[in-house]
Image 1: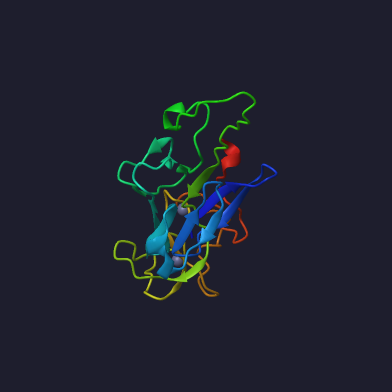
Image 2 (image 1 turned 60 degrees about the vertical axis):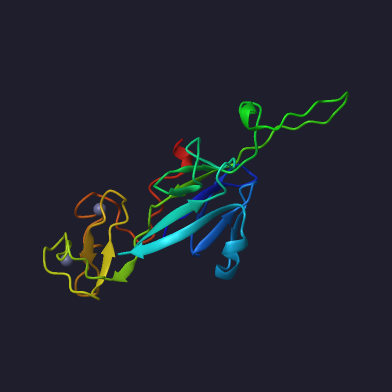
Length: 203
Ligand SMILES: [Zn+2]
Ligand SMILES: [Zn+2]
């Protein structure tokens, strides 16, 4: 399940699992769930789950064309983007640097002014390891660890590393995922209580 990293009031990055098909991001980077029958009337920045394939979900970001929403610092001319791992989503208002986006206001004496507070969120497609029925994917019919066939419906773990994704058996009889501390292909930790490998703290 993909997630959003959001900075809280104390300046700490907190992960929010995208466990709904429609998720709205408010101008102050607040996240709210949107009911399916309300998505048509939503006018802000909306994340839409476009499908769940073999344990991986895909997400679209939809906003009004010409809005101030940016991904990785770039506006979205047609208001749609397929999100990729570590995309930086900026739905904040204009600030002093980005004067091109601001409406001109003639200041009067003693006017109170405030800079916009840009709140950037990060989309992450990193998944945590979980046991799922093997979906019968055509091009990975063997366990990467033991090389034996993976039958459709067999309990299995898909390595959550975005660049890997190989499947391993994982049952009481065939615990190929947890056989060692690392994925048989990429070295990703196999502990089920392992934390995320990436967070915005690294930036
Ligand atoms: Zn195996
Ligand atoms: Zn792996």
